[in-house]
Length: 225
Image (cartoon, rainbow, N blue to C red; front, side):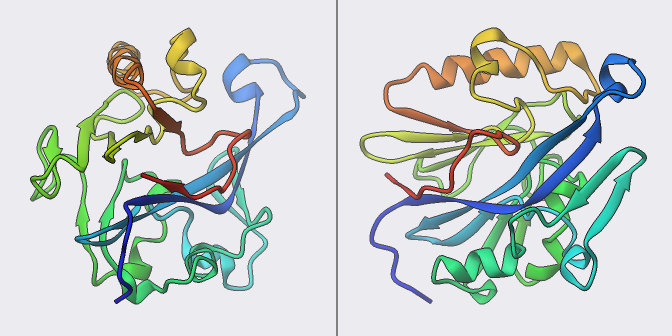
């Protein structure tokens, strides 16, 4: 197990989603919307963890694409998959001791079986019902943010001088915390708006970095806290 000197968050590029815009605007023959799929590797003194595990591992087993739902297609994009992304950062699956899933949709929990030995935290599961301080030291907070799905949660990673807010699908772009535009796919719009407002208030704290799971403008830069 590596020695983690500093709390850090590393975005991992774990594939791409393709969906028809007509699913949302009702116009036939519209363009295809492409969104990246990001997971996040968190290095912590208590262990190495993942926030989400991305697309199903089968996608990287001789397949070039996979239909997750009607009209929703997953592809490799420029990613080698979760395993290679982790290895590219100098770690391995054996280093992962904890998984936190924002929710259980296939583009966020599809790789869970790769790290079956890790302890998994999902909202309304055995360990997590509501907001949860993962280690009891204030460094990792799991936040209930329903709307996109009823069991959706986000994560706040707090360092000494700044913090990272991992929104999952509570919003698709950091700008959505300003314009309060909820995700395209929702189970409950009222809950989604409340979750957006909650995350907006948290993000107003000084030195907050907001990272979403499908932001086309996001980069893979390591954030040291």
